[in-house]
Every structure is written in C-alpha cells, then in structure tokens.
Image (cartoon, rainbow, N blue to C red; front, top):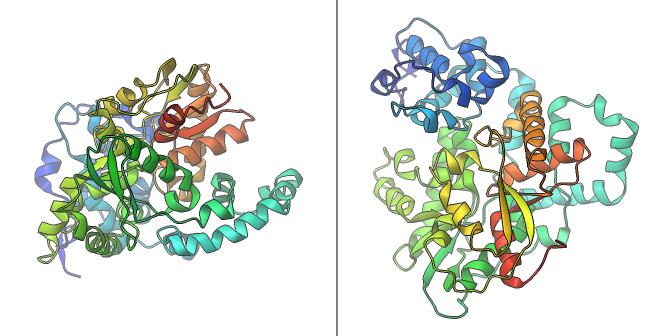
Length: 438
C-alpha cells in the first residue's frame, strides 16, 4: 500500500486539519483514564494527538512502542466531552487505529487472541454454541473448582479476564428467539425497529425482552428484523475497518426495508448506538451504501432518547430503593446522552438516584479492552467499585452490556453484593409492578 506522508498510508489517514484544532491546553488530562492512572503525557489524548502529528509529518514510525500508546487508549471519548476547543479526538483515534492495525507488528499470541475474539463475539450463532460449554463449566461445578483451588491463577491473564467477565448463563434464555413483531398496548404512538445486538441477545436476552415490553407499553409496535447481524461496533473501535464496513453493509441491508415505515431504530447498547450513528462516515466511500447508511444512521436512537421525549403512558409502580446510575462512555461521551437516562429514571415513583463519584471515568470495559488489557481494566474496575460503594447503594444501573459485565465481575472479585441492571430492566420492573425485593 502506498505511503502518503510519514508513517501513514493513503487510506483515510488522520486529518491534519483536525490535529490543528488541539491547542494543547490540558483540559483533557484529568478526563483521561490512562493519564489518571499513570500520569504520562504519551498516554493522554494530548500526547496521542502529538504522536499522530509527528507520524503524519514523517518524524515517527509505527513501531511497537508507538502502537502501544494507542492500544492502551480505551476510546472512552471523555476527552471529547472535556475539550473546550471541540477537538474531534474520536475521528482522530478512529483514523489512527486502522493504520496501526495495518502496519504494526503484533506478536503471534496477541494476534491469535484477537482473532479468536473477533471470530466469536460478533456472531450470535457462534456465541450460542459457546454458551453450551460455559453452561457446563458453571453447572458441573468446574468454575467453583477452578476458582477455589487457585488454578485460575496459573492460566494466561487474558484468558483469566475472559473467565472473570463471563456471566451466569441460562441455555433457555441464551437460545431463545424474539418475535418479528410485537404490537403496542394501549394508545398506539408509532412503530420502531429494534437492534438485538450480538453479546446482548445471547448474554442479555432479558434486556431485549424488557426493552420490547417497555416500548410496547408506551405505545410502540416493535419490529425486529430477523436477518439482522452484528453492527460492526467491536471491529470499528478496534481498528478493523474493513470488517466493520462489511458488517455495516449487511446491517443496512437487513434494516433498510423497514426505514420508510418505522419512526426510529431503537438501540439499547451504548457501544452499538455510537457506531450506528456514524454509519454515514464509515461507508462514505461506498457509492452503493453511503446515502443508505446515512439514512439509517439518522433513524437510530438510544432507547432513553425515545422514552425521555414521551409523557409516560404506562403506569409506573413505586420502587422505594436507592440506585446509582453509571454513565456508559459511549452513551455520555460518544453520543452526548446523559440527561435522557436520568429523565427516564425520574418517572419511577420513590426511586432515589445517586451520582457516582468520578462518574465520567471509564469502568474499564471499553469494548474488548478488559480482555486485551486486563490489568489496566482491573485497576479502573476496582476504582469504579470503590466509587460506587461511596454512594451507599445496592444496585447499579447502566445502559451498556459491557459495562454491566465489567462491574459485576469486579463486585464479585471484591466480595460485594451489588446488583447490576440495565436501565430498561428497572423501568420494566416499575411498569410490571415487580418490587425487586426492595
């Protein structure tokens, strides 16, 4: 592949115009998880922007050390929220990562582990097969044996991290299917299509069912395209641009027949939502899909965006409990959505919502980050647990499956009996009259 200037090739190199927006003021530093942990300039947004600049100018090469500074970035985009100059770090990091993936030399073990992840997690059918092994591991007592005897400590850290975040599974739930249409109850307000997700539909099928019940109770017919697959978010955030584009095209093909008849495409996973809303940018060079991808992106809404604009139609039963709300990074920072979830929670009578100290700081999940960078993810996860404990709550609410898995695993490791729930699960409990043992 031809080289443009410096270390980057000609395919979508980082924009020098976007680099020029950074005035190196330092407002991003306290917002950055890795800078907060290590206090190193090269592991801050400002430092990474400088590295991109010198690489673009031909003053640096994409060496192992260079790539490492970008591998350690969680892509949480807290710096985007913090920046007073409007620097589009999200665009810069998403342009730099594919360059690194094309030119950096990874070890055999690192490459193999990443291939395993990306050949499994974006494919629900494969995940469902893997669930059988996980179910046997849990129900036959093997998990208890491995953990109680210390055998877990002798396996590779990345495999240990994968074991730690694996949720308790039910074969019935993981293999359950959703109907293609669920009609509204009460006064009909419109029609929405719904994303099922990859990890979400296998490990969090209850969240999808709760989402459908809530939307139906609030007056929406819910259409669930049968042929939908992965939206490509995991690959996009990891720099696997070509694979992300392939997934995006298939997703457009699956949802496009419904675009004229639905008001929105509802998303209940923050990482998926941030990627879907960028489809127009992702497929900008594809003459067959660019316009279609932008039309789809314009229809996408987080479930909290839809619900926060509605006057509640379904009665809410009181939930006299104290909860802490955790902002998923790809909801708050990448999509700029923070008020809407809190507005939805405010419709539940007697619910007390606590803010988590350092609430803007990532929990360490960040797509596959907690699997490929387990030590850093553990530090951030433990820090999140400490901050949650300061609220005195027994339940944490979030809107992203990765965050829920990450926090639950860290609570368990520290012996804390803190319940984790998706936002729509709590709202569904209020509508259904389930008091959740409050």
